[in-house]
Image (tube, rainbow, N blue to C red; front, top):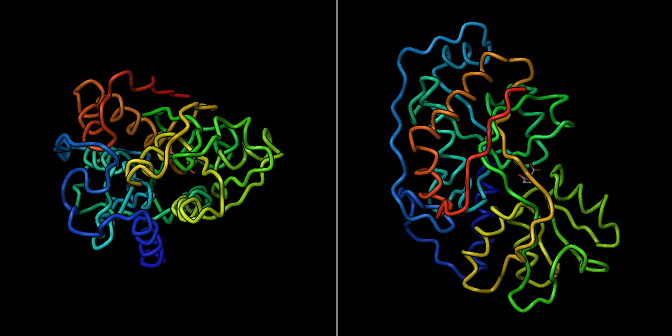
Length: 297
Ligand code: GLU
């Protein structure tokens, strides 16, 4: 499964006319536009999270399993020829892992797609999900969230010469998104005249945009900017976000000790500059970008 989707992601990138060679290992290996060095993380050795079943089981196993995307440049991405994911979500994972007492070699990066994030948390396939995961009430019925640590907005990715100017120009157009995602849901409910095509990953949508079989790809602007940056000028992001997507760290429902600890780590990363450095190393400039206030609901 992991291998197959890596290959598919690789195909999408190859179709964009990029070479698949040797960037792995550099801080921006999967990055959209980041160029600064990634932070280094100090692994805490005095963690005690009494009452967190998730943390206790992970500690016993010596592994923290984090669900991430692997085909979203700048956020969570694996470049062909590498199996090390890179991106802002991955840096958040390393930062949170370190604060919980897990070094980078004790983190298992498990691929999640949009539709399986809740079931993976419910079935304990992962301990945390850090995967462009919007916090909302529907999801909170079955999982919990720490954060938010970033706020994205739904936008459109189109061919550079397209005249699609926003969601209102989607009537009769084919627009691609992903099953189990908030952007697909919003197209269905708010823009029913658009013809929605869905896959399990956004890189498949990007392949369809490249071939001309869809007119637009819709998801969070942060994700789309990564694909645009890798497209050699073929694609553009329309740039008129039409939703708010607060990114949270998904957690098993009811593990409030773990939720508190992850919220502490997120807040600390703002105070000590690690959040900013991680952002600049992966997504690019933080001009005009601020970390949102953590919501300890
Ligand atoms: N943030 C949105 C969501 O959680 C879209 C991105 C994604 O599918 O991962 O559904």
